[in-house]
Amino acid sequence: MRVRTLGAGDPDVVVAGAVHGDEPCGATAIERFVEEHRHDVQRPVKLVVVNEPALERGVRYVDTDVNRALPGDPTAEAYERRLAHDFFEAVAGCTGLGIHSTVSYDRPFGAVSNLDSRKRAAFEAMGPVEHVMDTTAVSNGRRCVDLPWFVDIEAGEQRTDDAAAYAYDCMVDFLRWAEVLPDDPRPTATAVYDVFDTVEKEPGAEYRFLGENFRRVEEGEAYATREGEELVAERPFWPMLMSGDGHERLLGYRGTRRE
Image 1 (cartoon, rainbow, N blue to C red):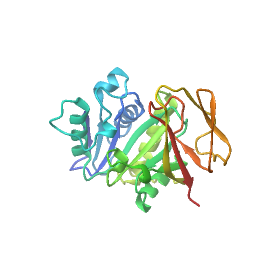
Image 2: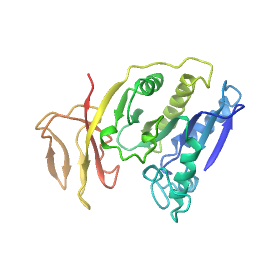
Image 3: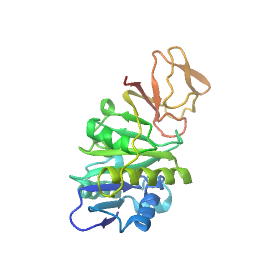
Image 4: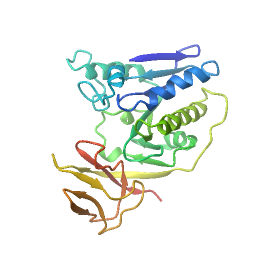
């Protein structure tokens, strides 16, 4: 794990990238920020590139998923369980932004648990973010977004220049909102969606998502196929992080949109 502090003093703001090694956009955004803004900070900030071995190999993780292993175990055999402990200690007590990417959607959106007015303000300060999914109902307490004051973004399509650019823009806006940088952020209205369940995959089955994330699926509408057979919605829902090949166990999430 690579930790860099900009500014004088003990930071209570943190930005973290590369929790997953196959999502390099956060590390790229941090490197660009250090190059372009290292002399501009008005208060200290901690920048963390989390899983360097996985990042170097271009894989999600080496032994286990850091984002499912928090708060970690410093005595564990698995490398990422020890890393999860170090990461948890590094961000404890901080206002934090985690940067991820996805194969399911090509624009930035937010992910959070226990959304409150302050977290929502942080998302609205990030100009590119138009949608925010609240995963409280399916939270297991072991992810970055479950930390007391942490918000995540999915910056765009995995391994693309666009995702790296969006990650950087969101990072700058977040740090303006957190008063690390002097300029005002670019506020944007955001739509909020409450996840009510996950759609599990059958092991070994081939899936294809037919819809569009953050577009409502109506009752009776086919939203995916499993081995060529249509899956039909029993009730209306808004799909989030849905993709046939994005996750080995999950097709994605279903939710409602707040009025």
